Length: 122
Image (cartoon, rainbow, N blue to C red; front, top):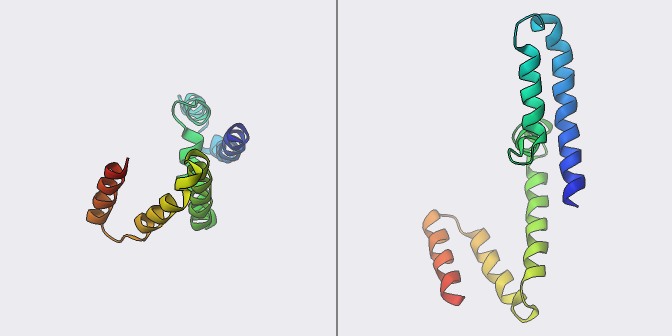
């Protein structure tokens, strides 16, 4: 669930921060404010209002490991499952067809047209 994902993401990011701190401590540990900066970074990663762990994970760790495409595909699958669960059964196929059209569009104008069509069908 969401809680497990949050904690796995947090601990992944925190472990990288901890290793970086361990190495940087030798070089800049004596500079005033170093440990305060580490504390602020930890709070940024932890507090849900910032979603710092999610940001660092998605924008730094995933691209560094070459898993960006896999992450996007996983996000798309999760969005599909949420969408299917929230749509009345009799409309699922029609909405899937519209969603496929939107995903296949190439330009921003088409995105605006699709949004307008969706509002018209509501």
